[in-house]
Length: 525
Image 1: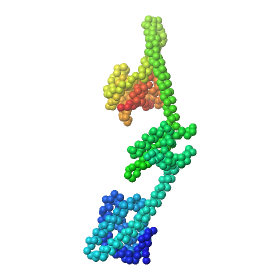
Image 2: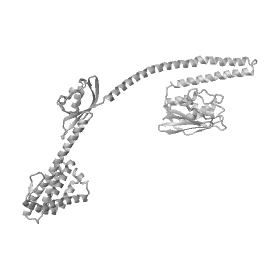
Image 3: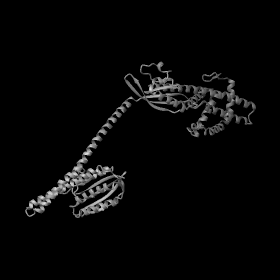
């Protein structure tokens, strides 16, 4: 009877089977110790150590016992098919785990070396037994190596073929243009052929022939860098086809061999025409926008010049008639007081009041205009000192002020001293004015932090306002209360808003009719 190895010419005669039996009996005596030593050695191996970690020690032992049982059944019971299938499974596993042939062949060498050491030192064995053992071990291991190697190579070939087919499918289905080139820039392979070309028109030709003349130096330098410095290079190019221009984002990357040398490189060209055309339109739009901005700037400068001329006119030309009205009305009151009736005298006083109000309105308007052009000079400010100074100043300006002030600790910031003084003067003056009719007027000034800003607030318990009309609150000449109720020009809060904006901040308010109001100013610290 003969036993044939899978697709090999190796067969075992009956005499050789007897030798194998002799080998197995002696091997079985030392198998556990040899396996234990091999396992200990392989645990520190970078590859086999990780493979061993995939099983517990108990699972490893069971696997060894199972393998030995298959060997025994093959040799003593002629059940070679099961043992051979196990060898095939090992070969397939090694191939799929990408284990090199030399790696698993080294284990076989170590096994033979460890087992031989034990057998040679066994004093109970006769010389003839040792000779038979080594003869049987050689035959049995040859069988195992052939079985594993045949399955290993077959599976490796299947994997390589499968990967090649997969690579070819990916290569040919890519939306990008892919060129494989050598050191001379000759095209070895291309995935897509368009523009009326055939494969023979491209493969074997220098890649520079398909590059615009003005971009050839860029490609030449890129290829040189890839092959000498072994790093990828990126650039943009274009291709003219009739009346159409295609734009491409290109990369040239080295293909490293096992010895780290570079014999080939791959060029990948991605069509970015839609994005490029969009960018060109965007650049044109930006250029047009910049031109419009320049034109608007000229117009704005002209408008500012006109506004300055108007401000000068208001400051000088309108003040003279107002002074004349005011002066002559006072003169008439003094010179003709004996001839004026009470009604006439009252009307002339109204003229004086109106002239004074007009003067104040002009002053506020000019101040509002100047605030938009005045340079902001930021310096550290002690806010508690600033607010307390403003309160004292307002109390002197309004002798009738009965308000109780509560100033909480305020965070210091950097800001324009004069502008922030004006801001708090306007807010506190408003709080005094609109709470003046309360029996116990109360005004509170405080602050809190909001991310990178400090929010200051001025709160009163005065007349308040209807939130329905909030959008009018910070407009020039916008008033929520009549002049008969509270005097004012309608510029103060607009000025507060402008000062806050000049500091990169903002203002807002909350209020209820007859319940008071709170004005907030957020300033970056």
